[in-house]
Amino acid sequence: MGIRKSHRIASVAFGAALVAGSTLYSAPAHAAVVTTPVTLACQADWPFDGIVFTTSQTITSNTPTSVQRRATFTGTGTSAPYTVPTEVSGAPITELRDFTLSLQFSGPASVTGASLSGGSNIGSGVPTVTTTTNSVTLKVPGPLTAGTTVTMPQIRINATAANTTGTVQMKVKGTSYTDPGLRVTAVVPFDPDPIVAPSGCYPSPSPVLASIAVT
Image (spheres, rainbow, N blue to C red):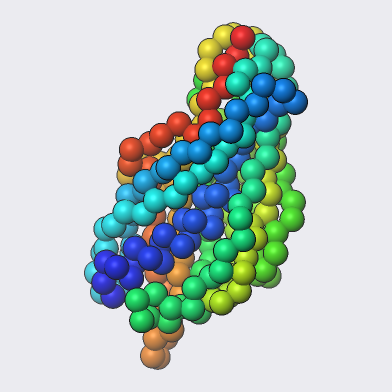
């Protein structure tokens, strides 16, 4: 298994998971649409070698430019459909599974809840979203069958601004291979047993995906 194979597996997985998890603040007025490229440093845990590589994805956010102190606000994000590959550099893929993407929030606001809706061809596993006061984690167990066109669920977040002014920012979580913001697993058929290849990725550098002023 080479670097190129691992890179393309993780790139497809990231494209599905990260855009699906582009959790966005929104408001009835004064919204801003921002498109941000994100590069992630990744490490694949292959049975024969540890592969390091980079992958990238562009995230479009639709956010309010500002909210008032102590105001509540919500946001949504969706991903475009994509086709799960049947092979990577000549190596067949049977499925992708176990997407786990975490976003982190900083500044004067707290996440109060999140929910999911929709999605198609995402397998028999039930997607979930969990929150803390400063993070949101999307999990899509799959399996996502090779050759199918997948639409990830829409995610909606509720948040409350603090009673102080400042700037709320959203980023992909993670600072190292051992502290990844994205985890994903590819399954490659192999005799006698399939290869299960997890990868961990973190943003490098870590751009701001959304920025909201609390006034």
